[in-house]
Length: 202
Ligand code: GDP
Ligand code: MG
Picture 1 (cartoon, rainbow, N blue to C red):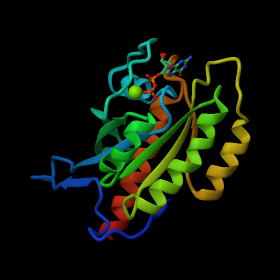
Picture 2 (tube, rainbow, N blue to C red):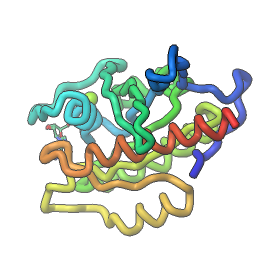
Picture 3 (cartoon, rainbow, N blue to C red):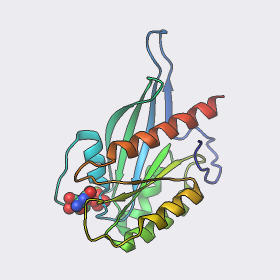
Picture 4 (cartoon, helix red, strand yellow):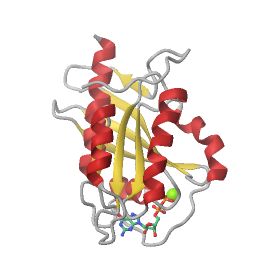
């Protein structure tokens, strides 16, 4: 399945993707893709990036200033590898004005909300519209309902899953704390990004 298209951009459709062709048949192509994390402050963007890229969890909330990036390699079903550049953005209002600098060349985006915080869920629609209207021409989107380990859920996951299905977005319930579904989230998005790259080449 391909990725939902935003408004066509002047730069064309190669946002965030960089294919280094294999030098010999023994070496598989290395694909690199930029993935950006978006969502309100405190929902767990930095924690998801840290869990996925370094297998760690920090119980303290340190405000991300601007953005930071980590890398992780994902092995795809066909055996090729996708190197993800995971960009973690500051979700606070004062950083929102700069966020487009980070998503404008992203091949994929993870929009994160905290399932114990209804306000953060409402912000998902803001980010989806933002990406559709101002984002790259093709951007694969996933929504992560984070903190699934928490007991006091304030948000109905079914409702968000329905919204994601209607809009062609991946939906995954994650816990950066326990690690549940974090690999699945990024690997599923990586697979969509790689498929999208294949579609563009053919
Ligand atoms: P960010 O502002 O979106 O980057 O949020 P952080 O990653 O800094 O996380 C904010 C707070 O939520 C921190 O205290 C984290 O330890 C906590 N947190 C993040 N992910 C989870 C999770 O999956 N479960 C629980 N229980 N807490 C989490
Ligand atoms: Mg952060």
